[in-house]
Length: 426
Ligand SMILES: C=C(OP(=O)(O)O)C(=O)O
Ligand SMILES: [Mg+2]
Image 1 (tube, rainbow, N blue to C red):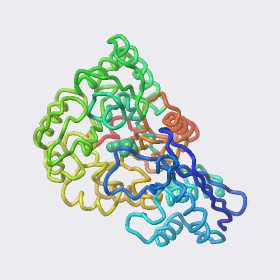
Image 2 (cartoon, rainbow, N blue to C red):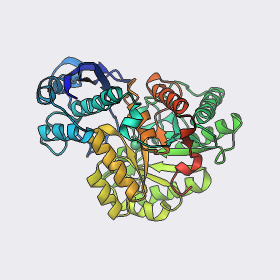
Image 3 (cartoon, rainbow, N blue to C red):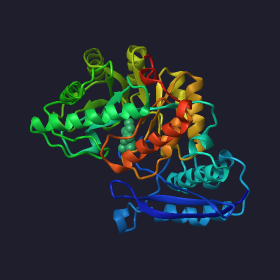
C-alpha cells in the first residue's frame, strides 16, 4: 500500500474565492479528491488558512502558495511512502509544517491532503467514507439544523445575529426531517413575500431580509413552522448561532448592524434567558464571544442545564482549548469544523475528547463551501446526532443533504435517527 501521487490545484468556493483541492492516489488507481471550505466569522485560534497576500490576482486571496506547498513539499515527502493510518499521515504533515498553527504549509494545504487520503483509503478498502472514518455496527443520522435566516457577517441586511436555524426533530428518519425542513423553508419564503420582505438569500442559503428586529427573525420562523403544518417545539425547534465574537468590542457587545446599541455580557445573557423562556430554542452556539470566557462561564452556569450551549469560536475544534473549557465549565457542546484544526485525525481526537467528557458534538460546514461532502460522512461516522450545513436552496449545502440521503438509504436498518434526544438536556 503506497501513496503514488499527490496533486493540488486552486478551485473556487461558494463565495467565488479560491480554495485548495487535493488528489491523493494510493497504489496507482485509488484516487481520493477533497476540497477545503473557508469561514468568514473565523475564530482567532483557528489553524492558519494560507492566502497569497501580496499577489495581485484575486486581491491576495488566492491559494497558489498553499497549492505549491502540496505539490512540492508535501508530495515530495509522502510520495512512495507506505502510510498505515490517517494519524500517521497527518503526523507526517504536522511535523513537516513544524508550527503550532500550521502557518508554514497552511491548514488549507494540509487538510485537503488529509481528507483526500481518507477518501482514497475508503476506495482502496471498498467501503463508504463514514466507515473509513469510524467502523461501527449502527450509525446515528443527524438532525439537519437548517439555517433559514442569515444575518451578521453572512448577509448584507440589518440582522445582527448570524444564524437562525430550524431543527425538524420529530421525524422517523433523516429523509423525513429534511422534508419537514424544506416545507418550512418554502412556507417562510411565502410569509416573507407577503410581508413585503426581500427573499434573496445569504451565504448559507437562508433568507436575508431587513427586519424590524432580531426577535422578528424568530417570530417569522415560528409562523412558518405553523403554516407548514407543524408545531413549534414539538415537531420543529429553533437553534441559534448569533456569532457574538463579531459583536464583541472593548468588553461590550455592539448591535453593529441595527441599533448600534452596546450592552454588557450580563445584559446579553438576560436576552438569551428571555428568548429561551419565550421561544422553543434548543441550541445556542457562541452565545458569548471567544474572548469573553467569564461571560461563557456565567452563561453555562445559568443555562447549561436547560439547553445545548455550543462553543465554536472559543474552541476552534482544538483539543487543547476544549480541555481548558471543560475544566472551566464552559459550554456543554462543541462545534466541529475540520479546517479550524486542519487534519482529519485531530478532528476525530477532539470529538473523542468531547464525548469522554459528556459534551455533544455539532458538525458544521463553513460559510464558504463547495461540492465536497466530507462533513456529511463525518456526522454519520461520529454519530454526532446533529449537523448544520445551511438551508435548502444552495447546491453546496444541498450536496451534504443529498449525501446524507444516500447514506441513510444505504445503511437501511443500521441507520438510527434520535430526533430531539440528539440535543443536550433533551
Ligand atoms: C459556519 C459559521 O460561519 P463561518 O464559516 O463564517 O465561520 C459559524 O460561525 O458557525
Ligand atoms: Mg458559529
